[in-house]
Length: 420
Image 1 (tube, rainbow, N blue to C red):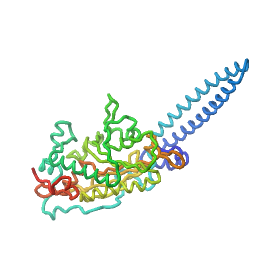
Image 2: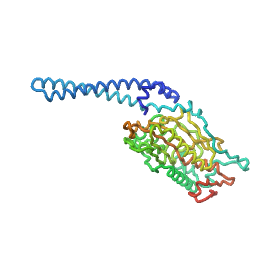
Image 3: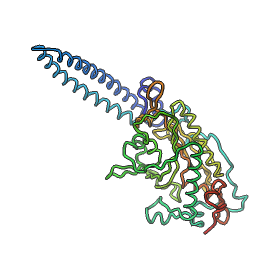
Image 4: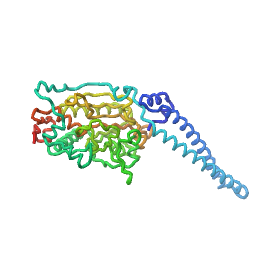
């Protein structure tokens, strides 16, 4: 939720943020009008209530006819106070509803544009030249069959398209990735968490996933639960309605994630790049707002350290304003090189959500100036399916075997995944 004070003091910046996101700037004007009306209604209500309190004191000390007259006045005033409170509550609800429709104010340093207008910040590693190795690379589906590691056909038989089984070395590779990710996070000072994956509407709305992202959320209508698309949701809601005394607090959540992938039919239908269910380790940070940019850089570095350990070529991009999502004011993606596609594909992402989520979830911290909203940030340490794709394709051998990155060997117990 955006800060009303910031909108009042700098409406042009708020309108600009909406415009570069490709969203409606007129919502800012509507919010300002609603907030002005709300503030006036609050003044009217508080003035009448103060008058009512004063009158109540007068009634207590009055006698006889004077007391009767004051009681009649108090009765009439109580009706006015009740009506004023109703108007105040209605305008407060209207203002709040408008606030919830408006995305976070973007960082001025974020690139402006749509999905294709990102800026490449750096490229790490050199894509492998398979012609020098004397063979044409196989895609992850072919390698998965050779290793008996991925079974998309039975996944479709049991659950439908975009589902899969990880079997044998595929399952062991997932466990190795998770264990390496969690051990790395703990060394970096993160608290490991296994959160619930079914959450109430307030948790989804509080993190900003019931607005433009709602179409990709699975909703269990009978019980009014949502299946999370990322453990960012339960980690953000973990401290809802709380005041934190010490910051930063860093969590690393492991969970299954569920996404409808609405509007993506026909995209990445082969294999396990875009699926409905997958496991992920997500980093989440609560910090002081003035520390958020530095924490964002740390999250990105932890993601890069993980990819470096996987020995995979990748690039880092600065995501453009129209592709940020409602909660983030800036986002960096790491994209791994996928040989058979001849392109980079997103494997991790880190977002600075500033105070947007904490205002919606009522999470504050103690400062010298009293309690204030804090900043929240998130970053994927590893999303299992896409990391498996990147490892299988980049480290494959001509016979379909796959060399295991050195960082994962202690967890897998082998140097090479061999054909079954």
